[in-house]
Image (cartoon, rainbow, N blue to C red; front, side):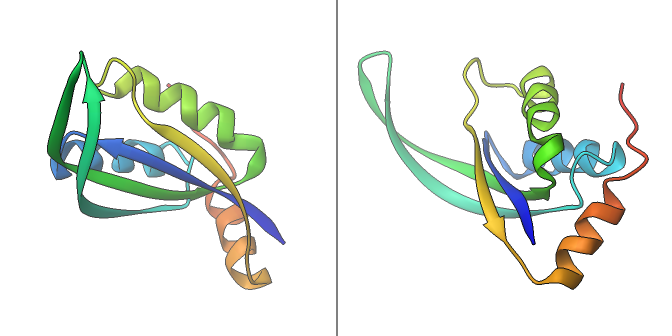
Length: 107
């Protein structure tokens, strides 16, 4: 059985929690894990060394585009990192993800 993992970076843990709560409440994702990370990247010609939070959210393939669109609409970054990865999982977990993302609530 397959599902999608959505990897999203956020400016801090509070933003990551807010985004995750919205996605779960709207049944766009079944669950989300949040991890604090260090990020090094170039922005406006300068190397940045920042603390961020990453969201690892689980959803179905059919909801991935809707998740990406919703995150873009609520994210504080001008260009948020939102990546999708196809994942295989045990049947019971994939069934749970599908059950939790039924009856979607869109705003």
